[in-house]
Image (tube, rainbow over all chains, first blue to last red):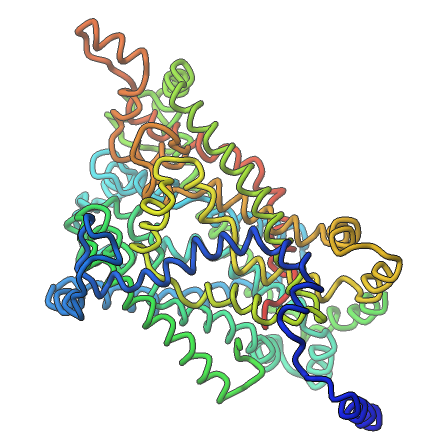
Length: 324
Length: 311
């Protein structure tokens, strides 16, 4: 192995070949590859890279007659204006609190479910449960908002018309009661994603070598002990990666969940407005380009930094589990 | 084989079995949770086949006083807007999924090749889009001002074509499952890169291609955000967007029916079972997904475990 490397080094030294092949030569040799990548590359440029340069809009006072490049610069005034509104605090708080809650819920419940599902020895039943649990993941947020509406509708909903009267509780105007929505949105989010995350953790559990458990059994470890000393520690890499991916997106709320499910009820905005819905509403509904793009830029930049920060922390602790 | 044999003492060991009570608890919990997953759908189905007066009297219920298929009759009697929306959704999903699968594979192959000097750069180019984006406003302006795609079907297709995550999954699949030796020998035999890709790489990659296609089908069929942002006219309203509009305003459906127009032209007021129609719309909208879902689900689970994307 080592002699081979040395020999190779000597060879290159003798020929004095420049280490880097010239760009033109590479392009000529691999032109088919560039040709193959072209369609996707075009989409990436249009859909992702040109908009990235569009972040300058946040620093401009856009008017349509001058166009984006011609409009006058406005420095940080859009940002100043954004932070002066009471919305900026509310949307930041909501986005962070909801997403933190979701990260925890999306870890604890699916992990517990995956471990328990693995204990169901009847293969048919286990498959059946897994299939049914996956169902909500396949529904669009529009459909889910209808499903929620069927239960919560003020006039006809199942809760107000059937369940609550049966329990002797007064009906509630669900779409006008702020207090209940953090629970509703968290439940809906968990309900929708449960199947997806359970499958991911299930796959990891199945991949664990059976021998660990055999050894533990011989040593007299109980089932519960095995779960906490074998299963969970061995799932650490996948748990870290899944959590890391979500922490990196902690500034990006699930637009559909917060936009569709509360049915745009203005009374609920203090607990349902998140950065994504705010950006959408100020831009499409209100038409304020400056405010909207400033909020969007802050979201992108902070989100970007968070990915790197969380990845850096993980790399310090356990470099094998870092994303990059 | 050997795993099978080894498993026997493991399972038969009483230490390794959960207490009866715990097993019972797990089973009942899963039954309850599975019910929680289907109950909302059952409620919606039941409402859609309820009689309108029964709904007004008792609200949405799991067992309507009187059954009625009025809602579906209404939807299919004058189905122009539904048929049109179905057409839009099917077209967008088909074209989108097929194009997406092809261009993702075409991009993933070169960046999977270790001998391609720029593989790293182009991998990063894709990966970076997962980390940073320009935000809604510039993105919107590119499609509306620069490309003038507002209200077109293109606006419903192009933004979802290249999903970075799937490019990376496909690349990993190419790297790990296609033996380098095959590519080299094909090269020696004088096959061009295109021939190698279409004749050797693609046929060997059906699992990952199926995964990409399935996920993209779901993404396109369930998408409503692009319609919300880009569609402002009556044209190109997908089935999801039609559901959204019906949710906001049930009259929207009636306004768009020719029967309603005829009655209103005659000076009358058009009446229809709005509550059950609303829910029948949902059933019509999720129909294809529900039928395809058990099949989908199987491949989804396989696809999710196709390979890590680390890189």
